[in-house]
Image 1: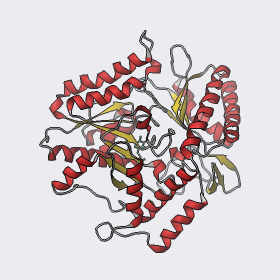
Image 2: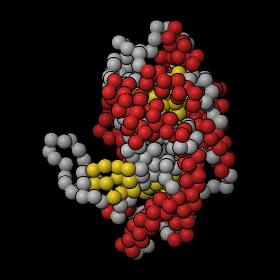
Image 3: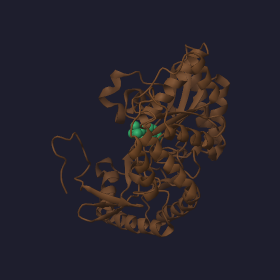
Image 4: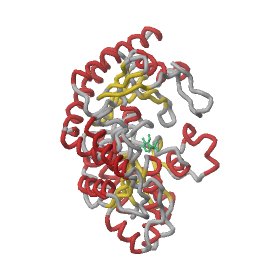
Length: 444
Ligand code: PLP
């Protein structure tokens, strides 16, 4: 174990060992201790660690060229990856712009939406409505969408926070509505928000189709997704899906939007696209939008590393591996197994209040009362305590304490999509041990 040295500007929740190497769903520290990567890092390492075929393909590109500036050269990896992605995208979402991470993808999506609107003579439209809670990234533009005191903190004065609607946390509602009615109720809050803001000022609505760190794998009722699309169409508001976490296969389909047959106008992706082999993100937009931009002189935007050939070679190799190994199929099958096992924990631990997710974007939430969904006392720091108990026992989890106006502790259990049933049992065994210790410590 070592604390971070003073020359590295770094904060950890607890002292962490040096990483030695990874293999499949496992990571090893320098003492030889093994950890199950139960959160794929931050829902990144979708095909597991040190995949030899991906590494070999990256090596081929490394030996050729690791950089060629996009204004100077076309590169095969970026064009091949764009073509591959276009083939995987639903509808006419087939124009791809590469970036290096999730925040860049979100901001690119916003700028693309805005510039498209301007080309359509709709320069009055600039507001991007987002949900709360949500997480769209750490840069100032993305923070304007994310908002909230947890993330915006002292930076709030430095940007104009965008309008919000509530994320559909229907599991907290105690009303007489059915789930589908609740879905419509939350979706209709978007219509009200657009009306309140003035429809001519609203550019886009952005949402995570399956929530990530902010809501802990929140899935809305089916009715929500279709109604949101209808509302956006009614008002000419562009629909942006932030699939930075939910995309690239994490929920069992390439994009999560496919579960509901809804095609957004723009999609932001990252995380599983490079799958930890390279910093990579992408934005896909509908072709007529991109054509309009190009006709009007081009997209006023760019990053030095956009379309980096090594990153794109890694992304291409990851996609090929996903196809060859039927990783989407495994994700769907193992997602069902994991969901079943996590739901089984509810019988044993009354303080597990809710289990949710899609595919292997899965989470559970701890509460002090399952009926009211009241959270555990804040001073317990349950989200951090359980993570440390599991970490010590060799299981990495990802947790947060946040839930809109009411705070709560949720834990993402999101192993690489190559996980097997036996490995899920291993995860559950360590998790159960950690939960037993937690329960004993707090007299639960
Ligand atoms: N959008 C979502 C849904 C995310 O989960 C994240 C990161 O967790 C981001 C955007 C920001 O991505 P990055 O940290 O790569 O900038």
